[in-house]
Amino acid sequence: MKSLIRIGAGSAWWGDRVEPAQLNAERGDLDYLCFETMAEATISAAQVRSRRDPSFPGYDTYLDDRMRAVLPACLKRGTRIITNQGWINPRGAAERIVHWLRECGAPRGMKVAAVDGSLITERVLELTDRILENGKPTSSLRDSLVSAEVYQGAEPIVAALKQGAHIVVSGRVADPSIFMAPMMYEFGWDALDHAKLGAGNGIGHLMECGAQVTGGYFADPGFKDVPEPWNFAFPIAEVSPDGSAVLTKVAGTGGAVTLQTVKEQMLYEVHDPANYLTPDVVVDFTTARLEQIGPDRVRVTHISGKPRTPTLKVSIGCTEGYIGEDMFFYAGPGALRRAQLAKRILEERFKIVKLDAEEIRIDYLGLNAIHGAMTPADAPEPYEIAVRVAARTRTREEAIKVGREVDGMAVSGIGMTGKRVPHQDRTREIIGVWSSLVPREKIVPSLSFYEV
Amino acid sequence: MKVMLQHVAHARSGDKGNTSNICVIAYSEALYPHLREQLTAERFKAHYAGVVKGPVQRYEVDGLWALNFVAQDALGGGVSRSLCLDNYGKSLSARVLAFELEIPDGLRGELRGLT
Image (cartoon, rainbow over all chains, first blue to last red; front, side):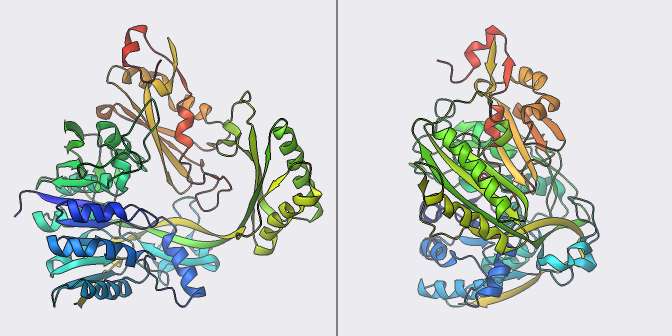
């Protein structure tokens, strides 16, 4: 057994930068490079797109960019890759990765594994009972259901590694589990060893958002200054067999790994810090100890764990109508009073064109569009303002009315109105995401292997 | 002395569905008890009035000098349904930086960003 493994992050979401992944591959001296590429609605959005666009392969649209960037260095170093870029087509992604492995001169027989079994759209209404968010029966979603997927744990990835996979590509797997799978495999952790899995999953949680632990989503000038915030590296965890780790990054890059960056990420998207539910284990962060042991090196120990729950979380995506939105601009003295009159005009116009909306929101961007009702009454009037309008509707025809009424503000509006050319699509479909629970034993992952 | 929270603590927000969690972390161990005593769940909810529409639960993580606030019905129906430009609520954590705290004068040296 190794006494230490080096795990690097390659992405924290679909749109993340590619160059820090390449940097980690080339200079991180990594045993494993792990990619997390999904948000809550990624699977449902992919389902909608694949219905409309037969050429969409169903996996991460940046799969080629990412693999081309990291495979040469990963092959040279022997770095294995774990990734959830498979989205709704892990097997297709695996075949595509084999293509890039061949292009990069990978040895014959090198294995890529695809992990399936997360998608349960056809069975979800039989397998689930209540919607977690509102307590209604999941059967109420029957007519709007787009996709349902289970958050799988690390076990199927570990099984693939045991069967010799050099690269493992999955659909929906819980984000921290992607990073913990190599620890379970290398250190021989049992799937029910909640002490070690708690520690390992906690480290996975610190890694899953990439640069958010190395100085990203952090800087605040004068309060939390970060060196070279244009030159971030993604994190590297040096993990020990007991699940403790040192978090660090490639030397010579911007950003920082400090007690503060680690603490913020530790609680990011966590509800009860003593009971962070994952498919593999319940993580307890309240016992954690952090120590800055050097520049950009933080040792994380004593994250603990409790036995996993008997259920897995299911994400259920549903079509829920449309949003129409647009904006236009005012500047100079009196910008706010012109914006206020423009708002009134829109409100009256929406009555005239009988806009049928569930909710309408008209904000002054520059004053109250972000913090809304929390904006202080004595906030200073800005020099420039955008009037931003959005409405949620049941049909696309209604959503289109929003942009059409903003078009009218060009020549039928008020003085000194700045307008964008309406070139972009001003409507979008809403995929609402609900959650439910499914008994763990009902979900059976499947593995497929592809060889160079 | 009365100071804005931004001198006492840093914050980050995260989203899950229509729930926002905002963690607030003291810059030093000595500042933490004052943060913990004064920034209650009730005051937090009042400070976010108009945006946080559901209940607020506070969790303490003393070892990290951190409070974690979990605010329900805070993201306009959820990330995909929200009409707010910042539909993930990433900037919501900035609001708590304006919360006012009473800090003993002797801790002035621990405060961040004071000129």
